[in-house]
Length: 439
Ligand SMILES: *[C@@H]1O[C@H](CO)[C@@H](O)[C@H](O)[C@H]1NC(C)=O
Ligand SMILES: *[C@@H]1O[C@H](CO)[C@@H](O)[C@H](O)[C@H]1NC(C)=O
Ligand SMILES: *[C@@H]1O[C@H](CO)[C@@H](O)[C@H](O)[C@H]1NC(C)=O
Image (tube, rainbow, N blue to C red; front, top):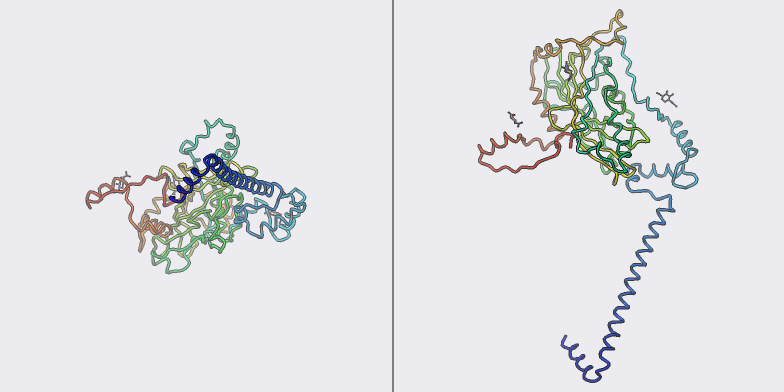
């Protein structure tokens, strides 16, 4: 610092006219360098930008990370192999060869192939399952579809049309054989006698790649299921044609435990998480995820007779359905999320199962009349050992959500507790619930 001052002083003293010039020259070279670098950087940025743009525009081989994660290396390869003119699109001719390849390897993209037929054995007993359905109350959603008069509202209306059009269950009743319910049964005797034993009805086996990537939203038709699970798809089909037994997000699948037993019967409590795809192409996907399905099955210990079956989406909370849909092609930009309330989504049987004898095979195709005393009969059952319905449901809940091991209280009870124990309350308000899918 001092050196410089000294130098300046020296210059000024030796040649006064030189001073401003020297300064300007110094400043000028600095400025020129400055401009040089700025321009270089800008030119560089433009070049990179143009290259990027050109690459995306001209390079049909560009695949987004989202797609890569979703269909993997093999899927991407399959696409490019069939995109014969390398324009980044499959034409109908190119698609033709994909379909032939698919069919010859045993695939079948007929939607109907997922509406599993469940033939009832001549020796079996039958039950009639009846559906109760009351559509989602649109006014409980935060999105206001009616007043959205924007340019894009047409696309939005189109996306939610699957929801708006779902006014009734797809089947009012359906007959099933008792044997079809096999998938609900405990795997062995010690699951009956020890209520601590929880078992899986549907288990989502994660492959290694599933651990890192979520299940794609970009799907319309349910995947093929193991034969013993066809009944679950068929039951859910009574509400809507496109149920997905494995949710995109945890908790996935279905679990159960035996709540009560006596010499003749067991009472199975189960909890199922499934979702529905309400749209078909060309509409964008619309996912409808009920909070959960709860249920009971009372079946004889020789598995030949059903006394009771009931399965429902709880409606005791203000919100019980999560919804996610796309208003455009890009998941990152066009994804919409909302929660709503659906008053009723229930399946239950009309009466105890009836044996198909040689003389009454015809009843296979007609509904068993509603038995008004069914619930009373169930209440009158005497159990040798039992836990309460709430205890059983709680066990399943803790299994799926370990954080529920800590007791949770509602607001009024929490205030009483805090007063009793002289503790403070830390209050967090949530939109939806953390212990089911409605959030
Ligand atoms: C695909 O499945 C449908 C319905 O199950 C059937 O009618 C059709 O013949 C099948 N197509 C092929 C190629 O197997
Ligand atoms: C079946 O469900 C309906 C609708 O929730 C209910 O009114 C009825 O009592 C249930 N029947 C049995 C036997 O659980
Ligand atoms: C909270 O829970 C208690 C005990 O379960 C119940 O009596 C009370 O009505 C509940 N209060 C509210 C606001 O839900």
